[in-house]
Length: 362
Image 1: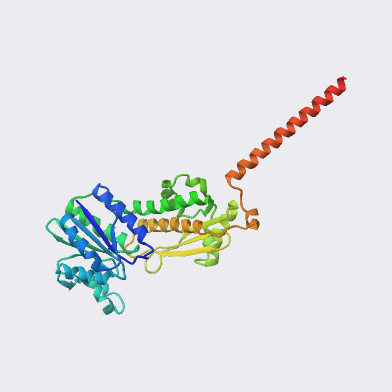
Image 2: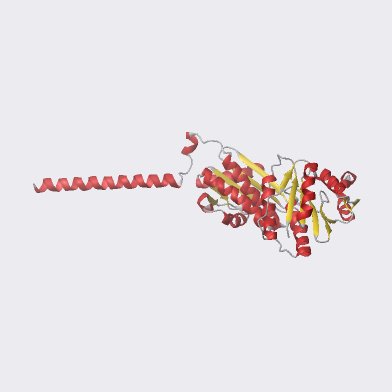
């Protein structure tokens, strides 16, 4: 099975690097061959020629489009291949639950014989359309939809039709973030204290991919009482600051999970403090996301946030450095100095005693 992937997205899409890396790795796992990264286009017409060429060489063509280009790309691709477009009833059923749903009817327009891949809200649904042994997928290109659509619909579809094994999307998503953080930990040499919340077990599991992770990261004591007052921003910020102070590190972090909200969504707050400022971000799951998948998303986002904070941390003043715990290198230098001073003191004492004894016997 040969897969060709093509992406229609804005050149400045901040999610492109992560999405491209994870898609490539997962498709490589799916085919068992070295995968090629997707071809990217900033407008639909420039990519139509490559799509036509891929039809001659590939069993599966995966076309991704971001939110801004989704409807334009879908319309032009269906027009190019003369697919008749109709409102898909399965997608319409999900859209009807939304307020002012008439505004979203364009999302339900799919090729007549397509297999729809709608998420719970019905927006930006992917689909597959197959002819004999060849299949074209059209999929959303965004972090909150691409991975879930592929895990829930695309890979099971390929397994059913082509007999391919299912790749582990979570594995590649976390691996990408781990590689980014690993590089930044080495570059900065900074130590980080993480409040030991319930999510730390997921962080520790994912961190097995990062060499010497435990040399840079320490877990600070954390009590559930620290979060008793709900989602108070100042308390959440303080949890990261307390972690840093516990080890006298510059960087502190905490990842705190809340109870399910009234809509049944999981919610997590990530806080990273650099001693001067704190970055706080709240993540919420969507209805189609399992707790396991959401935790993968949380850990991935935490690794990427931490790497970004390490890379862009403000420079320390001399006054700041006084309050930081010495690094292992400085500890080593201090120990060497102490040994030298001890040896020198011992030698001088020995010389003094020897001199006294000589004088006495003389």
